[in-house]
Length: 44
Image (tube, rainbow, N blue to C red; front, side):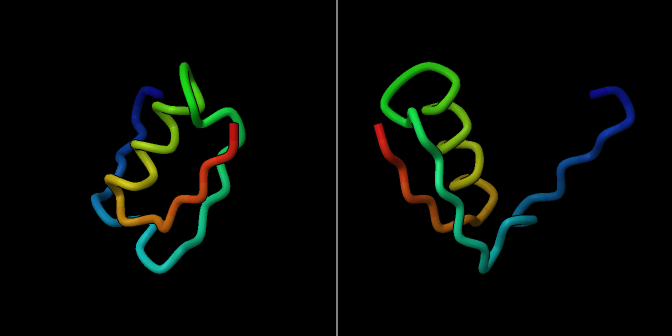
């Protein structure tokens, strides 16, 4: 991800569905989307 800048709240007002959100990469992805303002629905 060289040269990539992630702007805080870049998922504001977005709905994100993450499968496998109970553990591992899915969990980390769900937390990352939520930290950036996304409304996260997680399924495991």
